[in-house]
Image (cartoon, rainbow, N blue to C red; front, top):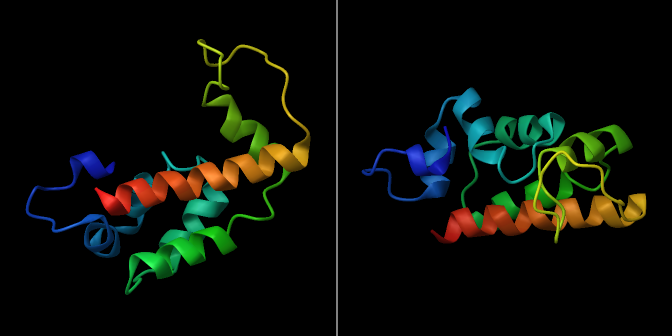
Amino acid sequence: MPFEDVPTDAPDFLTAFNTASRRDAEAMLRPCADIPRWYNEVAAARPFTTAGELLSFAELAAPDFTEAEIDAALAHHPHPGDQSAGTETQLPPREEAAAQLRDTAILRLEGLLDA
């Protein structure tokens, strides 16, 4: 379940994430980075006692994305300056794409935790 679908009586993202079903916890992470191996690993490590602990674990789970995972995740999101998702665009070098994807995932997760 995306965070915006969490019942209004849920005090915050971390509590909602920790208490969600495994499937719902994975769905809450998917907008951060649509890489099944990553969101499966992070959801499986629950519960987290602090937002910092969740962010640290999420970042540690992210550094070794494969080319296929990066390509699949980037296919779901338009590139900066590209108005239409799914169109072919010039990708940055593989290492840069992986770093950008990891950083974006962590920033999105931070945004959910701050909401």
